[in-house]
Image (tube, rainbow, N blue to C red; front, side, top):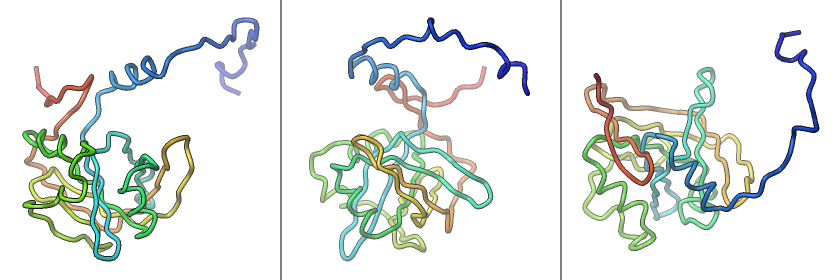
Length: 177
């Protein structure tokens, strides 16, 4: 047994504190993340949205997860097509991130963009750091979102492109001291 697990737990010190959804969102916003656009395809339709809730899950097999708002059209496309791509945005792609984050013009987001199709049929955006093309292996209900776990079927990486970062509603890039 580890030292930490053998410590007695003082339940009298455990208490619940109410907090607002604004406070919750503010703290989540302080977490610095990369910026991704999750894309999906089903039938004749493509869709995509800016997502910060993305992470790797496993190296063997290669798994990633994304969290999609269940009210979003992208969620419906992932659910119907059983696949998605995670496009990791590059420095200078703030406009693209904003375009895919807006609820406005959802069905014309891809107009004028250069895209390729991944092995799953999901759109792969050009000029990004890279992309994970994934087949859904699990979906979990999680409040107002759905957590999709995807097995990476194919990926692209351009190691010479710097990633775009996001924190507290601001974009940035990594700077070395």
